Length: 248
Ligand SMILES: O=C(O)CCC(=O)C(=O)O
Ligand SMILES: [Fe+2]
Image 1 (tube, rainbow, N blue to C red):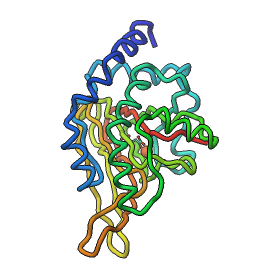
Image 2 (spheres, helix red, strand yellow):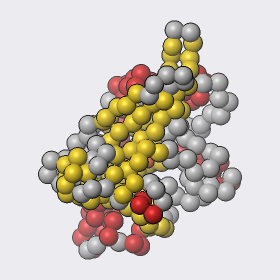
Image 3 (cartoon, rainbow, N blue to C red):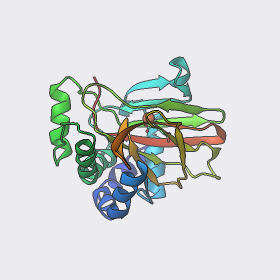
């Protein structure tokens, strides 16, 4: 990666927290409560998307590279960022967390789970790190034609923040075709429900990592979610994954 791109990635990070704050959070938190997922429309600019996707080529930013086919995860690859995170991602993570932490606490209360999440991401990360979950989980994914991401859950230890965010960095129809973000929801003693989330470049999807509460006629029940990506039909697709707990 060239120096110009590195600077662009850094500079575009300076106001990403205000970009996050400017989103329609009443709409987003409402969608999360009713659907278990929500679109964060136009979270990043095309320039920010391109700058982050370009980091993929520079291994200095990453702690590891995973070839999905080798683990039965699908086809394609991803890299976990190392600390310190690039500026934009370092700012994005706590800014998103601050708006999602209330949802997480409400969900846990509804599901009868005692764990509560502190207001600041730094305080939650401290909890993870003290429990030996100290490796950063933000990741950059790269898919080519024929690649896909099998349905999964991003659990990396005992400490789990119940929501996560994935940002589409490429432009559907131009950079790639196919490659839709998919969620499935397994309801107790019932058939599963699938949801396809249409995203434009720079849009993000926030969704449940593992469980979420659903209000039924006879009280609240817990559903089990998985997420993945359908087969990329052509081109190349990049995403930035923002997971709020760190890994063992
Ligand atoms: O590529 C995607 O849209 C999904 C990536 C993913 O699994 C994640 O961010 O955890
Ligand atoms: Fe994932």
